[in-house]
Length: 289
Image (cartoon, rainbow, N blue to C red; front, side):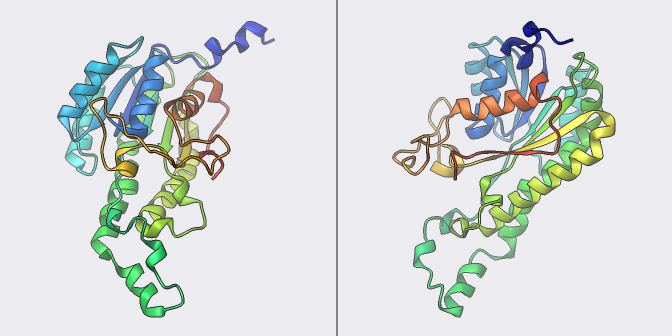
């Protein structure tokens, strides 16, 4: 019989001692996830192509504890880097990992952002020009970064996640895929069709992987964030690798855009014992978009 003490937040959402890997964990939503895990006492490996970001985040956010942050430089679009990432994790964490957060992503269509109002949707030529505007290369690059790379990172880290399911009694390893509400909403996504399509595919891939990996006791769930401050939505970040969005939250019930706690709470839910009975699901952390 479960006691009341077993249902305290410290028991349910505890990630102390967990081993987590966050791709793109040095800024934006990835850093928010990293902060939540570090605050819960996890050892977090953040993955990025930018060594200066890795070093800066590891130094600043490890000091705040109680968990720790370590950086691993890797380009997850490069198969060799994925292999090297896996080998380094295996060497540093021979007992496996508990949490993988596939977060790294790009939008190659930034130049079209915010200009959907200039399209004449009653003109075939105007719509055609709008849809063809960025070309095939942008589609291929976006799908490679936002979908294909995550598939192969996940595949390569399955052995480590399999081991990780035995680290904490009663807990199964958790893959958390950071997709986007753009993959669900019925809109033009400001003309970012490749980005939205890549995120819709990533959400569906999450469901497929959940079905594939459950015999290994590895859960796969998806978070679809709405509007959050990040380098992707604002174009840059400050000395703490943080971004800001001003005056864009009035249309949400919360009266604001997304914040660190919104991502951290969803990650802690899915990654901890609290989410052990949740698999193949998508959580919209979007303020009601």
